[in-house]
Length: 371
Image 1 (tube, rainbow, N blue to C red):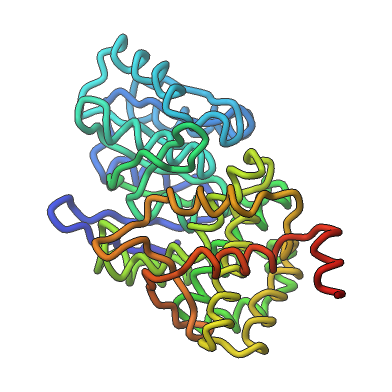
Image 2: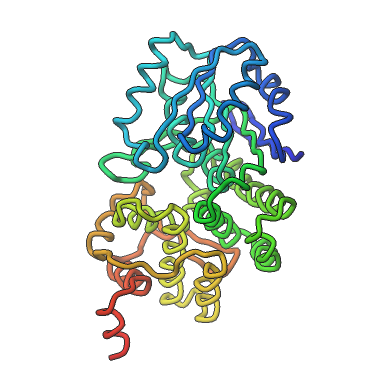
């Protein structure tokens, strides 16, 4: 078992517990005061069928009254209008601020449950039990939750810290490969932003990571969260240094919308990182060798380096609507080298256009490049 303490000024620190089973879950929820409370477990249909009864039974052993909200899998369940049935359920069953919302699932479930907890009666207690790699290393640990509005990703959100994050790494075994590698894009992103040594470790353990080796996966998750913790502790509300963790997200979110969420979040983040690296290359911040290494390193992990059928001008428009905007303008994250990211507020439409042409694959583009 591993424990990582996340500092949360004025809101109370919370622990991320990393274990290879649910054996310690009862003990951990007891520590945070979850005993004889109402508990609403939010999950999706796929996850609930595998883990729902097991997790619900653990809370019932603590004399909790357990309810459940089971969503359809996928981003389709995270729109603002999808929140209303859950609010109604909690209201009709007289949930109070001392009761618990528990997320059991991937990133969509983590965001959905976290947003409900942050807003129902101005805040109920929250526990995250992430079951996807993406949720384990991103959605559950930073206190940022968001829901979609009119097809725009995470456009409405809040910063709301859980009482506990309990990561059972054995849940990785039941993930489909496409979802597993989607989460790996987030792992790779954090290493590219902060640590060249962790990046090299990922490369050295490529085979074991692809094979979901239990020990390596647990080590990978712990290293990633410890890197993120550096920023989360220092900048809990994502207003300064922590913005670098948005590398690839600003473009990635626009690509998700352009593809009507038919691609995974991690696939679009990978493409967003490549676009950011391309802008960095053109500004002579990265060498061609560094750019190609970043781009091509996604390939062994089954992540795309090109995308088809996107309207570049529409994508640029959606990028400009992304939420990551500071006092000096829209924040983009660029790269000086692997392990060193910087925040820039002067990325132009022409730079975005060129970067998107670099990742877009079409017969027309191939003709232009050959000419």
